[in-house]
Image 1 (cartoon, one colour):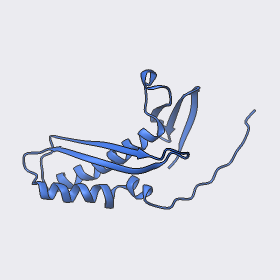
Image 2 (cartoon, rainbow, N blue to C red):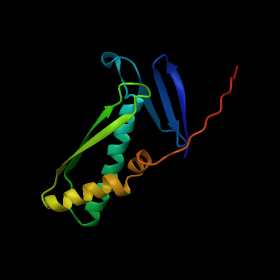
Image 3 (cartoon, helix red, strand yellow):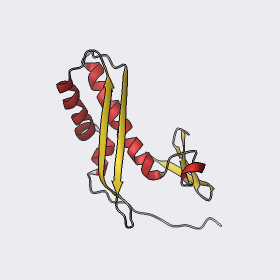
Image 4 (cartoon, helix red, strand yellow):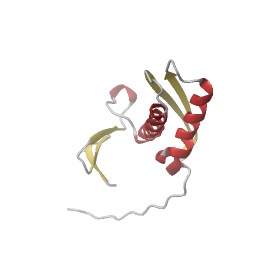
Length: 135
């Protein structure tokens, strides 16, 4: 898996995957934003990952999913690096045939056991970098 991120302007970047799908990354003040910041994208990726797994589990059990929302809130450290110290996910399901007990169990599994983004957040990951001047 690979992405390429390019500078668009001082506070705006564009990330593109190998299939040429693009995401805008925006670090401008809130009133000027047209995209999400990197940390907002992380929260969105976590929620989307859990949603995909949860919907698939529900559909596999022949359950009706009219709507699913995940409100994801993150608390960050005050000092740099300003990583997350706590993330809370609020799952809101509209379904006429899912019992709360099975919804709670499946949402927990989706958010903890199956979601690769959550797995990455709780893992110790090594990363390296290389620096080149293309001028």
